[in-house]
Length: 88
Length: 237
Image (cartoon, rainbow over all chains, first blue to last red; front, side, top):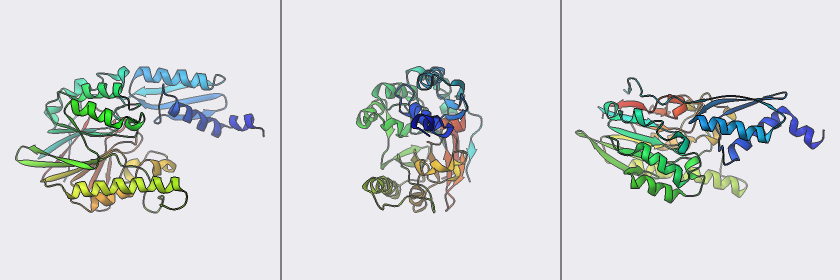
């Protein structure tokens, strides 16, 4: 298996894309889950803003233009909590 | 009764400005103090920390923070710490603060923490210099936490961290990355002192509730875990 075939192995591909999203300054994202299946890459997990979700999409399409991107990332809720927890 | 609000991993930047503010305006109805358990920004820049400072300043309760790994990313820790201080937000790293809450004194000791893993599955200071430096950083941080907790003269004590002190609050994260999410040395420091509550963040897919081996409640308040603007815990001094 040559180098480009190795990098297309799904495990390597997912690991490479995970690093891209962590290390690209536009995303700096360590908290989303990335799954690669064939020519599809699936993103899931909570982020802080809709703009950030779009940035993940953009960076991923640049890094893997041959892949179909399914971006199911969601913006985490930030509502007032209900009753608190009493300890002891 | 002392009511403690806490949240971490809010990862604010200009695009997320004001996201938590509507709920924060009402934090005084829920709690006597607000703790921030790190990863307040995405890249640790001064600009992002200004957004954080504006989000969490001017509240009716005192605000006490530790920084997280994201807040270290731009190598500007003194500068981002100054931004929080300028907005009356206390930042702890190996030190503590005592706040009067009604008739009680609430002591809070804080550190960022670090990785290394948990009993039976943790790194040791052996071999290459890089590994030894990694483990020694955790040892140093845990030692600073222990000393800060030990020195607290208060009616109730809270340990505030970014990294996790126990594996239970990491459940939901891949076990392979636990050594990057926390260290048992932090819970050793907590159990060696008289702590009422330990709070951390960092693990977005973790679980909210856990307990140290000596029975101290541990709460993971990473915002993706609590799914509210803050969580609230009451302790009886």
